[in-house]
Length: 478
Ligand code: ADP
Ligand code: MG
Image (cartoon, rainbow, N blue to C red; front, side, top):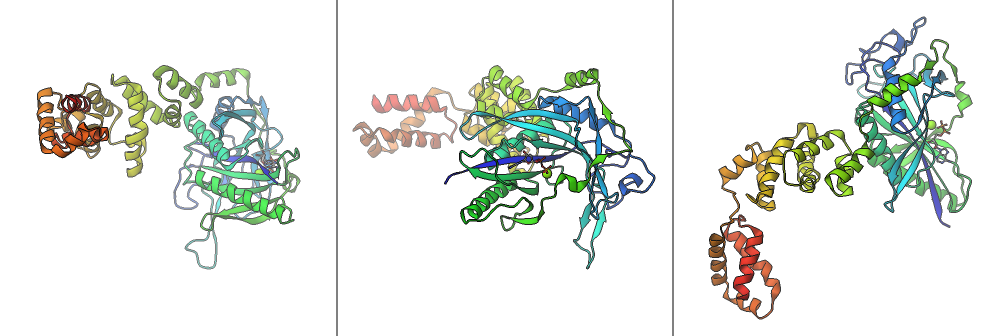
């Protein structure tokens, strides 16, 4: 029997506000425990939450960016449960009337086709605190710094059909929230995490299978691995005559497996009701239109523009537009050189990205600026150096040896285009290798590569490769 996989994701994006969603306490990461929790976050009796208007602005931006409806009226609700990191005994969230509904985005599926993934809703809520066990003897601590941090929970339709599609969807959301500047998307710090709902059904069956929900996945790699493990587990279970139970599971990255955490609670277990301490959020048409005007160019539009305007390959455009700073760097470099956008794209996607990765740097901290890279590529374009020597120059620039021109001068890397100099090198190589010359002339064409290599060696890689080929061919064939 063949199985179809059904996945829906709930992504929590921490909103990049300075203060919390219902209090003035700071949201800065990494402070001493319990130094950034005020009476509201601590759940003291008698205090009142006050909505941070910036979160409404951010949610509206997100809604418009994914072609969703921004609700004219949304309502905060209390989700009641007990946990030590939740001093109020309830989380303020949105339930029946979320701020964003009926959105969509597009991913590229395994066959390279565009695929629509529906976004059911996105609602505002507060984060809980955190239990701490490490470094404590026979006890646990509670850090409430995170309590009250604003989250946007983005819920997808069950439109996703594989772990790879889930990752593509999550990456797209990640790109969008960072483009909008509404979340830093920092996954190590937990600012961007996801719960994956996974089920399987026999190919062709309409009804969904029972799903398990894997909680708190905080890297793209874990999302893919956890989902793939879960798919296998469910299929094996059913094929062995068992049944999937609806439950919450935890992914253990060390063992690469998911484990049952608790049976799934139903919505009515939470006894949701509208929070009497908060007014409904009312948003006017005019407000929505004003936010629409503020929206930056979004990733899909930027990608299409890069292909249309710069004629770069579609795959490269996708990589270049995955983050705004990378796209900006690319455009700044293209503007400074006549070398051609595709050459700039090759370098940004290739050598530059490689160097950044190796040093663990973001593009904003690149050791070679967009202007400097443009300077290097201009020298490739005007034949001062070959593409191969350019890699050597780039390495020196990366190491801090100066601009492309400075490195080329200091190391004497200027390309040799003087044909008499190249001819001299060719003559020397031909004279030194009579055996190979004879073989070549008796029809062993493949030896051309050998001769080119020898001439390059003779000229320390600096001879113009086109001229070398031409002169060699003329002399060997002549
Ligand atoms: P809850 O709030 O209890 O987690 P929801 O019904 O709001 O449940 O769904 C949460 C997520 O689960 C959504 O992303 C939805 O697309 C997904 N989902 C619902 N049913 C299934 C299913 N049978 N298989 C996989 N995902 C599902
Ligand atoms: Mg859920």
